[in-house]
Image 1 (cartoon, rainbow, N blue to C red):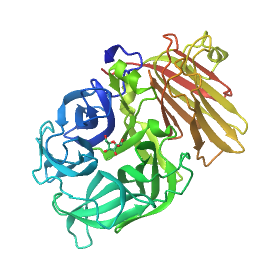
Image 2: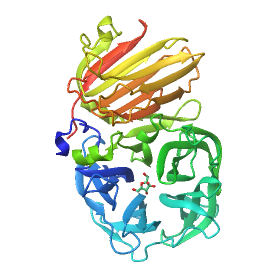
Image 3: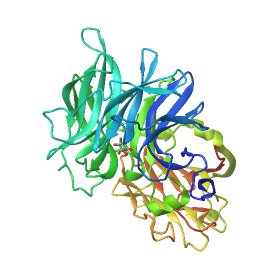
Image 4: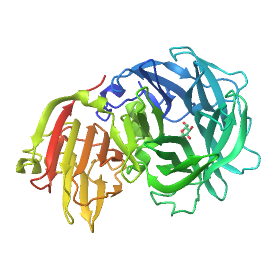
Length: 477
Ligand code: FRU
């Protein structure tokens, strides 16, 4: 049933069926990339969550493996929630949130060498309760790493996502020698739930889900997903400096202009030293539609994260994805033929577009995808410069004739150092899953055109200096 759904992607990772949310336990080991994920194999709804598992040699073709963790009597009886992989002196180890009732606590499991079989630690939960001096709004999700202290001793550190009631989201810092006994050190950083209105794309929420701390090109980033009272909002990150037991923030940024369509991301450092990030592209159609389709949730493409010139993060699809570019549909300066679906040579529901173009003040470039010839359905990217500032948005009001789907506009400002430099736009179309990148700033979204002929692509508003390349993308299954 799932395989016949026209909204199911052809080269984004999806679970075999059922429900998928967050990426978990990311690691590359002996050449194999492992992707675990929050999974309900029984139905496409968020219920008793397992850990699904897949592996890949190239980040493109994935092999499904047996379920890695399933809820069982004890601290994870109601779900094995998000967590990470660590290599404990050669022993594959997962640190995850076991859920029992309404409570999540840190649990540990150790695995076979091929990461297929996992054994839960009898001592679970390894942290028995949230810190007694913190009135937490919620408490779950883990980022674990090892570092050497001033005395030259190796030790484990972890942050747990949380929030302090009446104050804001936080990441609580712990230390351990053995991943089993943890000492609470205090909050690494505390957010302010009054930093912006609740509806603002920069609101930091009352709790931080899926905290992820890493350094890339000399920048420290603390990524989190802003959450409030059962509602997921959007991923954000602080840039700043992690030193001692604290993170000193410089600036707050949106991780993806698609907000909730790139939620609960997690990253890993791969064997070649790259920082690779995945996020959950949740549905924009009603639960009942997902139930009828038999599946829910798309994993983003793997994104390589580097630093932009201004110190914020630059994201781009891993170059491995380029092997799927089968047929060149366009290569050159955009022509008049591209203005109309009827004459445009670019057509399809699996496409990769790359546009390099200057965007002068007052200029407005439109790229429509998943468009019908009569315009009844079309999804429109707009890139424009207004008073020097570069804006990128996605209009979804005409994306689907199905009134039940989410068609709210998405977008925001693209920080740019030079108004005259060419802007790099990449748009990847994969059925209902869309990922765009403008100068390394992403915008993920889901759209659900109803018509089988909603395949057109048009490009308007570019100058003669623009260069466009477009490819048909092969499927990865
Ligand atoms: C984020 C999240 C995590 C939690 C998991 C449960 O989407 O809510 O905080 O661990 O999903 O599936």
